[in-house]
Image 1 (cartoon, rainbow, N blue to C red):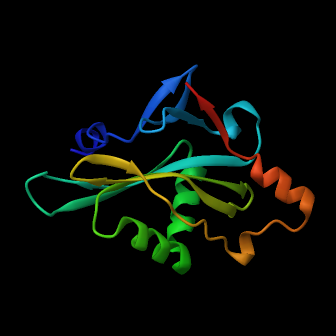
Image 2: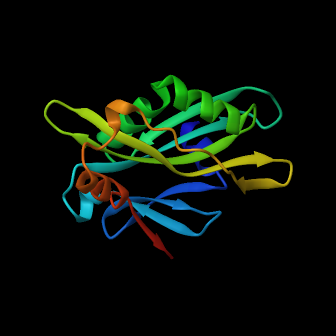
Length: 161
């Protein structure tokens, strides 16, 4: 059932590229890769979506999946912050949506240090559209110096396909 629901997502899709999983933003025609796979840094991406279980009913399923386990932790940390959850609720309302969330972490012990929405699409009657959203950052996840800010800004690898 979960595979079927994920396969119906018209905005974001997992696939394998060069032996690594990537997330494709089908609306914007962009591919998001985990920096952990090609740069070895402690940064990853994850997928968050609300899907219709049965298109004929109001029942829905929330999906969370990271490229790696750390990507899932980044998504979970992102949505457990009250301000970010409220921003997501405001932008998605009661609609179906798909999002790609990226962030950085420390490995031992696992601690998410930053997260941000890289892409978010909601579905209306005409299909998926690009959302305009505000990135909400937590103080605890803010970089400590301008040098760290530069590293954070370049932490997500996006390529146009």
